[in-house]
Amino acid sequence: MKILYFAWLRERLNRGEEEVSPPAEIQTVGDLITWLGSRDEAAELAFEKRSLIRAAVDTKIVPHTASIVGAKIVALFPPMTGG
Image (cartoon, rainbow, N blue to C red):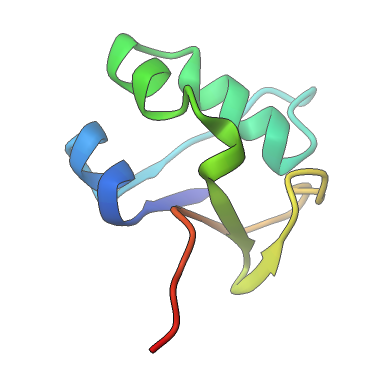
């Protein structure tokens, strides 16, 4: 699965994307965020305010309760503003 990071997540993690293979028990966006945050100190800090992080699974914006099973791309980003 490819993870894409945008805005301050990208800056804090010092990467725009990565390929990951989460364990089978990681089933939702929320699980994925927790798992990603547990992998290193920079990620732990980047994901500490989980409620601010928005997600898209295969280009569809979804809540943290959405399934990632079978997903090819998960994008993580801060809230967006219009204009």
